[in-house]
Each structure stands twice: as C-alpha cells, then as structure tokens.
Image (cartoon, rainbow, N blue to C red; front, top):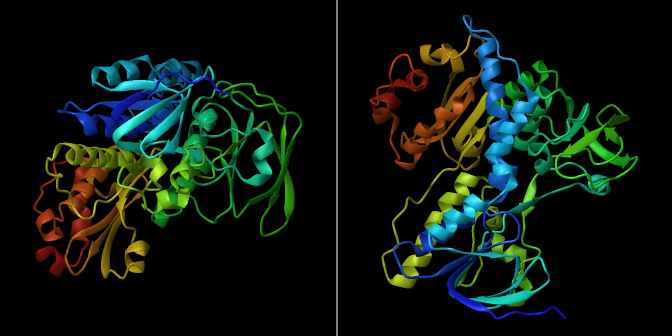
Length: 477
C-alpha cells in the first residue's frame, strides 16, 4: 500500500509545469488572494525550455549566422565549433536544472509540487512523489490539465529505443549515420543541425512533400536547402520493419546501442538501409492517458472535444489545439483570466472571435506562416485572391544575403479585402510574420494596409511588393 501524507488545498491546481502551465497559473491568481499550485513530475519549465524550442534554436542560430556570413563578401566565413555549439545549448537549457524556474514560480506566489498527478475525484488529485509516497491535493475552484504531449513512435520502431526529439536537441554523441523518419518541423530542423554537426543524414518521408499543411513553396524550398547541405531526402518512403543489434539505455542524446537496420518500401521496391542511430519525428499526441480522466467519467476524446465540466480545463498540447508553445501560452493567458474572473466576479476580458496561429520553422531558409493557406481558404469556401513574389523582390530582403532564395505569399478574402493568411520563406522570415498576424487579428483591409509605409531598405518593404501584386480594385478599396 502506498504511504500517504496529509493533503493540501488550493484554489487552483495546474498539472504540468511547462510554459503553458506557468502562464495559466500566473494569470489565474495575479492581483488576487487566490492560491495556486503547479504540479510537475520532471523539470519545471517543461518540454519547451529543456528539450524543444530553446535548445533547438540555440543550436540553429549559430549555424544560420555562419551560413549567412558565407554568402556576404567582405567577411570571413566563421568555422563551426561543435563543442562550443553544444555548450551554448547546455547554457540555454540551464544544464537541465530548473532552480531558476522554481525561483520565478515561488516569486510569483505559486506553490511548486513535485510528482505525478492523477484525478481521483471532482477537483481532487492524488500526487505520487518520486519516493513512492502520495498525497491528495484539493482545488476549491479549478484543475487545469497542462500535461503536454508525447512522441508518436510507429509500431515497427518501438523496440529499438529510437531517438526522439529530446535526444536530438540533447545530442551528446553525433552518429556518423543518422536516419530521420518524418518530414515535419522536428525532422527538418533536426536534419539541419545534425548535418552541421557532421552526421550523414538521410530522411525517410512517407509523403511526397516536406512540411505538409503549409504552402507548397515552403516544403519545396526547404527540400532544396537540405539537399544542398548533403542531406539525403527520400520522399514516398515508408518504414516496413526495423531491427537493432543491441538496445542500450545510454542516456539523453547518446547512441542507444548497436546499428539500426530498416526495411523501407517506396514506389519501386523494398530495400534495406542501415545507420548508427534513428530519430523518430512522426508527430506527437496529447498526454492524457495517465491523468485519471476515468475517475471523473471522462476519456481523452472528451478533452479533445472540449467536453469538460466547468471546474476542469485543458490547455496547450494537452488540449489537442495547435502544438506550439506560443499558442499554448496565449490560450493559457485567456483561460487563466477566465478562471480568475469566475472566482472574483471581474469581467471576462474580450477577445477577437478568430485568432490565427502563427508558426516559424527555423531551417535555412526560414519558413514563417500565419492563418490559412490558399488551399485551406478555398476549402472553407472563401473566395480569395493571392499575391506571390520572390523573397528577394525587395531591396531589404535582397540585401540580407547574396544567395537569397524563397517566396512570399499572401491570401486575401475578396469580399472583405482582409488578409486570410501569409507565408514567408527566406532568410529571417520569422521577423516578417508578426505584421501579418496583426493584420489578420485587427482585420485590417489591404486598402488600409498599403498605407502602412515600410522603411527602406528594410525587409518589411516586401509587404509593399506583395500588396502591389493584388488587383487594383482591391487595393483601392
């Protein structure tokens, strides 16, 4: 029988201490005398801080700068130093120590609890600590599931102890040969830094494009760039079976045993591929299987459909919404304020009826997108017109590098003249997408947007080139 210690009671209990959990907790109690606890079974700060966004960008940024310098006459090309690159990554993940995050939480008046939490009743959670003891935590007002997500590993690869995104961002041993299964964001970003670190990278992509769901130009440009780095990208390739000489629990970012052999099927035949390590980047799913939903008469499907009792909330990856940190944090701020309003009687803050999800892929070239693609808009029955120009069509973007390639595209609703979506593929594209996000949220028609004068010669001048490509009557309002 598990020994149980005395319980505790708070107003709000957040299960999951990543950026999403931290935000919902902060917004739920700020400016009030409400109490809140964050329950985390690993590192406070979550996946993003230690195993995803922060380490991946810490690895990618120096690589991006080095490649840009190689294309700018008048500057000597920097030389990549793998040990220093990994040391920078370690600094940005605080050497996998969450003391700083704990200090922030406690400074914000939040109580930090350690262990694994499971619902055992209405507003009641049992917390099992690492030492096997358990305690009950009761929430007077709300319980929030901010439990994140877990990797999806295809059945043929489950017994190989394959690398997941955590191993890729936490790389300690660079495999001489690395297979990457998948063609999404994790796959293309990891391929970029692993190739730069010296691995011979081969990607096995089941579909016929990279980055499906974005405008076709995004996948096309990234494919060309990866191949120019020496990455072998095989499209239409499906893993049928796989084996490994030995499987070892060697730790984060280390090669997990002997060589890997994979049977791959494409349109022509089935063939065998070998490598030192394999990275599975085939998506993630909400972590809802072990949070005790059944104890309150719920199943994961109820959470994903938003069918929850008033006291229970899901946010971030656990909600099934866009699995992006910035989106989860936005929704956390909204839900946190709603919890606070329900407890204090303050008004719920107004928000737009439609808020688009922006996204950046930090490859070279970068891909930045927000809102609907042309295909998505037409699929929803929206009558749209598009404008598309080369990324280097403006002086500001052409000056960024002497090898500028890429595409910029906007999708506009012809009825309202308002932007539906935008995609930028090119150097530093991440810095252009927020203007599109503002235009969509603010419902700024393009005949007004054209009076937002971009500085010359800055990358923002690309907006002018895009707007000039629209029909004259739309620009004139």
